[in-house]
Image (cartoon, rainbow, N blue to C red; front, side):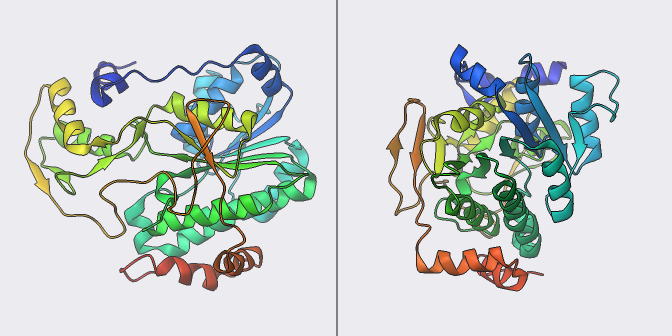
Amino acid sequence: MSDLEKKINFQSIIGREPRSVIFDSSEIESLRSERVLITGAGGSIGSEIVKFISSLDGITFLATDRDEGALHSLSLDLDARALFDVPYISLLDIRDQEGIKRTLGKFAPTLVIHAAALKHLNALQKQPREATLTNVFGTANLVDECMRIGTKKFVNISTDKAANPKSVLGYSKKLAEIYVANFRGPNFSGFTSCRFGNVFNSRGSVIETFVHQILASKPITLNHPKIERYFMATEEAAFLTLKSSLINAGNVHVFDMGEPIPLSEIIENLQRVLEKRTSITITGLRDGEKMTEELFDKIEHSLNTIEPRIKSANLEVEAVENLDLLNFIASRDEEGVTKKLSKMSTLVGY
């Protein structure tokens, strides 16, 4: 761990210790009985999940990503040789239906953890088609193949931006949640989604941006003095995902992330630990951005689960509008879905 990483830790910036992420022996044995396929395995959450799973003796897993550089970095953590000839690393693009068919057909997963996604709000506000192809159709490609080969468990990693969505990113992830929930039933009761807040210091995160600006002595760009966000540690995010596959309490699982944190407080803490100050420029809220994120839709009811730190909710899959959208997704109607997503943006989409 570098000196910078030691300074910028979850407790020093967020102000609380990461919550414990302990599984009991029966849960560990349950995970060991699965054949686990992870998409987006090179990302912050995906790689944390892979590292934990790989620490369990006797578990079979396949870590996939379309980014060979991210897979290379992950493989360095798992095996210092960083070779792609190991059986648990594979390139996979979730937009590629044939690639998904071949990979899942060969590996035959019993549990799929779907962490692959496009997640940058600004980029997707400008390019809703990209959100359609990756976040919506990419998820549908995986779900459809899991249904075809009989994979019983599917955990889709979503975002708090999917609750009462205001952005292309949030709406695309909400559509993915609805598509997954649509297939949850007696034979596929393990199909569910997890909603996360901001994952602390993940690649491309707001904290990474603030750190870069402070170290480069450039003005810190803050959207609004009172804007706030939920934060969770990567180990908490990995815990929620795996725990959701075990407790399986509803269409959506939401982790207790504490109270939302003002970004101005994050900036102050970063400047303190980095022992460097720079000016702050207020830029105004971006298109599709909220002052505070929500965890549940207005029509959703928060339900308790057997895990005190996880709530669940069920989605209105049967709503008329959602049924129309499900048909668009099932038929891969790119124009139909993208047109819906474009309504979430005041920018010109393409």
